[in-house]
Image (cartoon, rainbow, N blue to C red; front, side, top):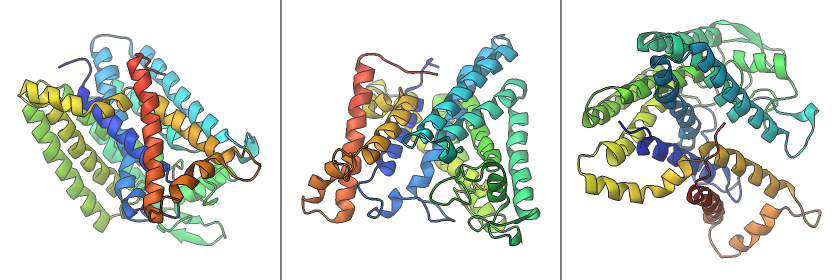
Amino acid sequence: MNARLLSLDAFRGFTIAAMLLVNNPGSWSHLYGPLGHAPWHGWTFTDWIFPFFVFISGMAMPISLGRRAALGDDKLRLLAQTARRALTIIAIGLLLNWIPSFSLAELRIPGVLQRLGLCTLLAAPIVLWWGWRGQLAWALGLMALYSAIQLGVPVPDAQGVWHTGSLRPGEDVGAWLDRWLMEGHLWRQSKTWDPEGLLSTLPAVASQLLGVLAGQWLLSRREPGEKAMWFMVSGLACLWIGQLLDAWLMPINKNLWTPSYVFAMAGWAQLVFACCYWLLDAMPLPLLRARMARLARPLLVFGMNALFIFAFSGLVAKLLASVKPDGQTSLKALLYAPIQQLGLAPVNASLLYALAFLGAMYGVAWLMWKKQWFVKV
């Protein structure tokens, strides 16, 4: 197998492009349904994105970390290197949350990059010291522990009313734990709970470990076509398990990262990756495979600098929303105004702004790719 899989870069690039699209509308009041998160239970296209990042991070671990350990590299040294990388990602996330207020008193502690870093930090020793059976056992055990805590431990909500097993916003055990540890430093829109809270990191680590298992299958000596087929089969099986857990245990819910959400999103991740893998790495027709690689180049360009584009786009979006040249109107509003004047329906104008932002970030990614600038931590 080639040292660098085009399919994994394309899958990562697809996820980054989708993130840019859904995170940067012209107006949050005017969105097509799939481009916004599900209000609470359920899922939309947007709810694919974060778990795909976690799953991809898991897939990459056997390709780098696991393979180096198998070749005899010192496991403690590998763990230390991974911990440094994870802590760097967490620090970047905190820095982005600190901007533009620059106030430690208002700093949101949880976040997307913080969760990605924590998942990597917690999954690394499991990857290094356990085989696939142990990794699967850890994933299932973390989801079972999370379910037992959420459904069996009584906690008070923000008004002091006690609940056992409530999964309504702000009433679950995770929300209580986050208020207890980080009150005043949670998601500004909710204040009493956070979608990247501490307790739901447990099933998020399970998502990463399912990605690790997928990465191990990718490294196996099976024929590429067989790998692609079993990614499809496993993806469908995970979707089925997710639906069963949605009906019998806890609903699919991104904010709570429920076990049903873990399996459903792992299923979709495998199905999407299976398509990328077949078209870019497994297809037995070299000329057609090369053509697919040319068509997928925008995704490859995004995927090769994914972390940088993630952080840079977040910084640019914050600056556009906070910088007001005249003291009243933000740069984003100034850029969005001409689009609003095109006579489009508000939802289409909002989407056009998002596409323009996506195009601008692609220009940055393309320039970096052309110059062979690849930022790693």
